[in-house]
Amino acid sequence: MRYIAVIHYWSIKCKGFSHHELKATTREQAETEATILKFKRQTPFEGCSYTIIEIEEREKLNLIPGWIRKWFYRKSPSITWGY
Image (tube, rainbow, N blue to C red; front, side, top):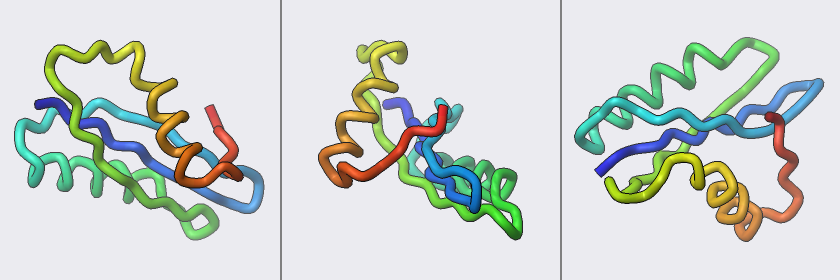
C-alpha cells in the first residue's frame, strides 16, 4: 500500500490543493509525514489541512492527480485548484 497526502491550503490570495507521495509504509507513519508537510506549509496568513489517500501498489501515480480532482469535486463542486 502507498500513501498520498493531499494538502488543502487557503489564504487571502489563493486556495487550492497539492499532493505528495509519502515514503510511509503504515497509516501511522503517513499521518506523521502529512502533519510535518502541513506545518511546513502553514503560516500565520495561510491555513491548511490534509487528508491521506491509500493507493494500491499497482496503480500508476501519473493518473492520480486527475483522480484526486474528480474525487474532491464530487465532495465540493466549488473547489478551485491551485497548481
